[in-house]
Image 1 (cartoon, rainbow, N blue to C red):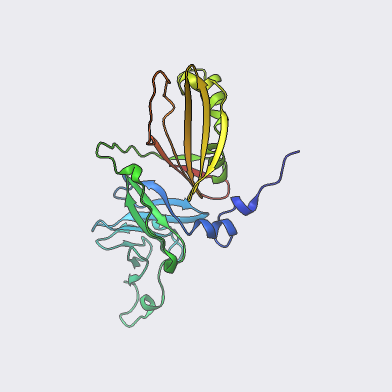
Image 2 (cartoon, rainbow, N blue to C red):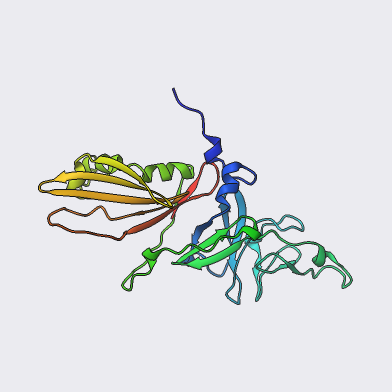
Length: 271
């Protein structure tokens, strides 16, 4: 019979066990190329937010609705420093402090007593990352040696998927689907190379960051091993699926680094 939803691992809103856990990590949520001259409304970990780059080049990620009257800051006016709400001109810095309340008298202390909710943002590898946890527990920004090759060409992409983040991670830990979905059952016949049609023997080897999902096949006189690396909770790296196993070779690098980023309980970004 169908099983109930595992809410402990799939509900990611504020205050949920998984949501608070996931907020302790940096997550990409936009491509650098997607952030132009206008603010962009985004949803991340069950929260509605607005991302922008101010005229001085700094990034901001604020709560979507202005703390004053609830107007969406996706219609805000980008300023030299921060963003202004389109309704009453309240001026917020990139980190959330209220810089100016132009409709209030000079004696008003409102700007000293209120701020807009905001999260930390970083830019790397053509992606924009957010950290949404307690500021005092901010982890180091992750370093991946995959991005350090001298001849490296980075091609970032982002796909919205109508499923929870755990379903994407589960897929990455499942080498059997590569044989059937990407090889045997592929109508085009060229998603993965022909050796992937051989069902593999499986091994799951723990690492300091997660585990290796390993598929081993006997292809003619060769032993063909392909390992995908899962770095918990939601990062994975894979070699390509085009090895034709025609000669002895070792490929000790990945072709894809993938984040399964929770948008909310039922939607995710495949980045």
